[in-house]
Length: 219
Length: 110
Image 1 (cartoon, each protein chain N blue to C red):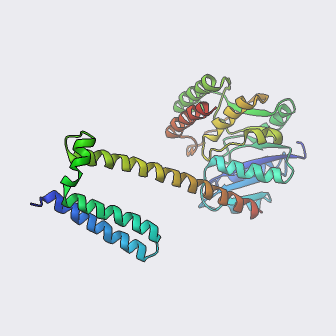
Image 2: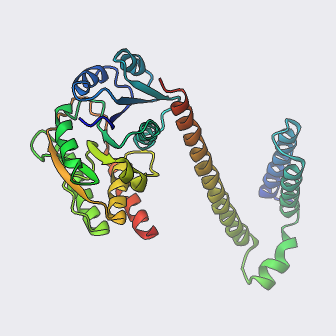
Image 3: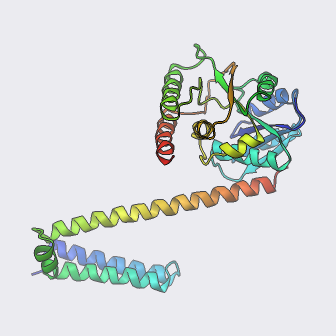
């Protein structure tokens, strides 16, 4: 993996999973930033025990703000490219080299989850609807607009730097890609859904679609 | 003759006037804010006491049937205005909190 590539992992109450995720990521890079988003458990201590950079939000701000903190920190340390993945073990770090390889041919690499039976039906329906809305509003045909496993160059980050503090940031990023005419590639990933999934809810989905309409009107 | 709803309005106005005074005493309101709210509550008490004082405005100028209709319309306008003001304050505060928390995280990062 390139020496100037950093991996950013936003985490909120992930003490159970963050250690395993970090052990796997460390096989590919040592430049890792965990951003603890106001966790009430020992997420920060577990991350610190793995000798990685750890930043902490003193209160919970949401995924969008957390990722932005991590990306800004990495850029201040001279990162040329950034890979982001979730802390709950949903994304397998073994895909990192594949993302890195594709990033040499594009500004951004977007992971996409295979729509199989591993994915609960409500997510399949919600994702399809948001993907369709994204295509309609921004003219971008992306297989999975909500997948958090992504990679981008530092130059691309400066153009897609989002304002959303919550899960809407995934969609805002896509909208900004369309606006900035950045070159993107997609990369398939395996998705592991744990029993205690804490990600996007139906309400988040409604909010995301509403926000997309606002962004489209603002253009 | 003063009817029940008028008594209720007067008591409410007096209570709010007292509350405004307490807030000013605790220095949670500036003198200017205290003055503004006090004038508003005194106006409210006068209106409750003499509802016919608005007849000229309501019936002759605005051509509305009842003073109550006028007060309801004004009340809704006031509530919508206050909601918008609160929304903008909350958004601005959220943004400031986000910036502070993110800056602290980067500065104290390990």
